[in-house]
Amino acid sequence: MNWFVLALISSITLSLREFAVKKAGKNLSPAFMSWGLNFFMFLIILALNIIFLNYHTITLSFAGVLIIAAILDSLATVLYLWAIKEGDLSKIIPMLCFIPVVQLFVTPVLIHENLSLIGISGVLVVVFGSYILNIETWDGVLSPVKSVSKDKSSMVMLAVACIWGVSSSFHKIGVNQTDALFWAVSEIGLISLLLFPFAIWSDKGDFSFSKLKKTLWPAFFSTFTVLSYYTAISLGPVAYVSSVRRLGVLFTMLIGILVLKEKIKSLSFAGGIIMITGAGIISLFG
Image 1 (cartoon, rainbow, N blue to C red):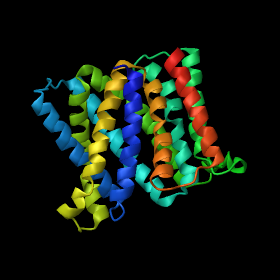
Image 2 (cartoon, rainbow, N blue to C red):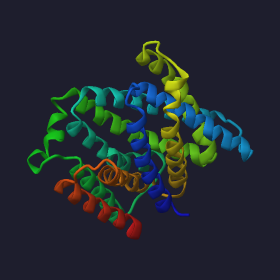
Image 3 (cartoon, one colour):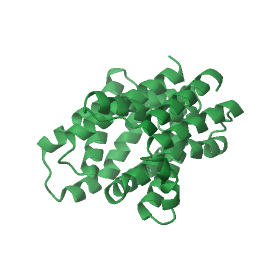
Image 4 (cartoon, one colour):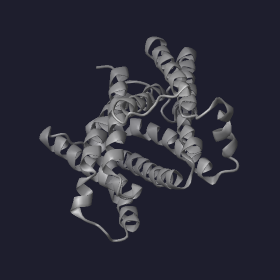
């Protein structure tokens, strides 16, 4: 199974996770949902490591990469949740489209990945399509970019994109030093510990097992998302994998149309076609 297929699987399960979060997390705070999701993911992946007798020696190099990645991802999660809560979604969500762009500059430095020009063009086409898909109207096509200097939540979400664009390189380093299964249980376990205080604080002491159980299904889909993603970046360039994963928004949109009976917008359709074109370029020529 090559990296493109794994990245596609990750994008599909990512959309299923978002659907499960929407269904299960109506009465949960974002911080509690995030922690519960990571906690159950940790238990599931820990069980898989035990079943397959998968273990590695922890080196100082691995520990350093693990701590950096977990801190970056925990910080990005907290900032992401804050931006979602405080900002206008139509202005802040398009900022996440710039994650592959950040990776184009970061991965050559941190992990020495050099992409072909046509591969880079494919990444940029996916980014453009993803951006267009998140815009309400053509008249407001530049509103997210313009709002960065004026709107705090947009600036924070752009920072989130930068952080995730950097942390992905540390994921690849960690996976290459061990494997996807061991790296996943190590990082997600540490993230769960780091997010736990935020979950308790956001829940205002109203902690119960019945609430925690609501995060189980999102965690189930998220486990497949993470493991397929980590395996994909061990086989292919990070920026390519991340770009193909952006197709998850198309699957989310499809679920919204078929299950939630939402209406498709012309801009969403155009953005989807552009994204598929970019993914095709990466797959065939990247």
